Image 1 (cartoon, rainbow, N blue to C red):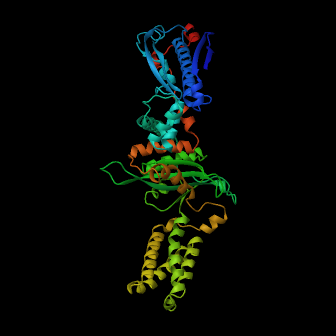
Image 2 (cartoon, one colour):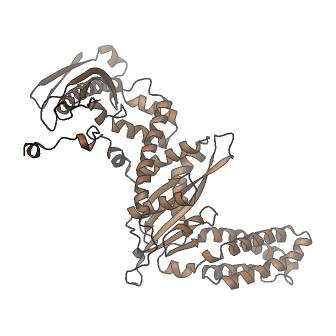
Image 3 (tube, rainbow, N blue to C red):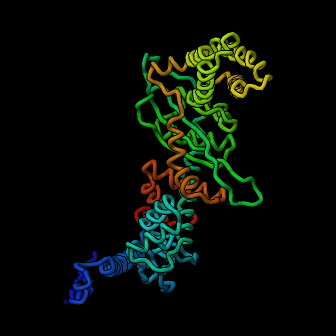
Length: 483
């Protein structure tokens, strides 16, 4: 049996376009189990339909753009070429005219423009660019290319190299948009104070930035083995509220991190007024951000990192108290002392916690010298915790009060962002080497996808404006010219 599908369309001028697609469904195919239309038949039908629609739309748009908007006459023809437009349903080759500028409206100027370049500057539709970038940012480039070829009628030339180039190009476009928006947000960076009324229990008053870093293996043999990518999530409110917007950058300079942060905060409603809180793990790179942000900005060390440094000390101390009866006279309450240090750090009693921790380290020193491995390990962990607390003394707050007020005390949002944005694509199952530029651009695509704005950003401003003409030669509107 042979199926014939007729396609008919009518343009704005009343012209009718007809196409036919034939699909062969023989009895032999039924015996092989090929019941109904296959993926190959669907590719053939959609490719024919796409060819008819794109050809008709391109001809109609080119004809509309030939009319001069000032004098309403046809512009002269420069030449005719062909242009291959790649779509999600195949590549279409269309006629590509070039129109000259109107000689009456632009005397003395000789210039031409291609109207199809305005609606398709990348020789690929925005939908194909978006789909390729989304798949390329989610899975390996070869796997993304294989997936596209499996379900879409695309050419064999659409390889992993094409997926990589399109993903990087989309990332560059997104990065340029964000850089322009960040430059505008930089104007709001003047030091200002909160002018709103201090309302008790108002969690929406505080803008929280949960920030962390991820390590990616470098592909550059002349650089370090790894480079860092800053991952953050900016939101408003406390525990249980929406996490807010993601942003990533491979540029760890202070102005770059500040501009990205202000851009994300601005999209969350920050206008220069309000309390800003930065929660980090105390890394030196992340300490640059609070110093560059508008005032008042508070820097808080993540409680999770403090608790994880105390947890192994608590486990070792509990084991020593249970199994070592000979320590009853030397360290009778080592387990309770460590719990007391954790309680004081949780409630912001920093000076007392430092004195108690220093006393614990001093009491463990003789046992360490005697060769006790448990005491040596506990002494090492206590010394590291003591150094960590002293280095981040100004960023340790009353976590208990913040928790009871419903505010955030940990970088859980940033940790999950590192896992979902960076780790799954670059570090965990897909271990590979990256250039810093490629990783940065790929992260822009993944961030825009996570923020739910990839489609809107790619469709914003892809069409070029009217051919650039100096204002001196721009014609006046017909009524003013007649007057």
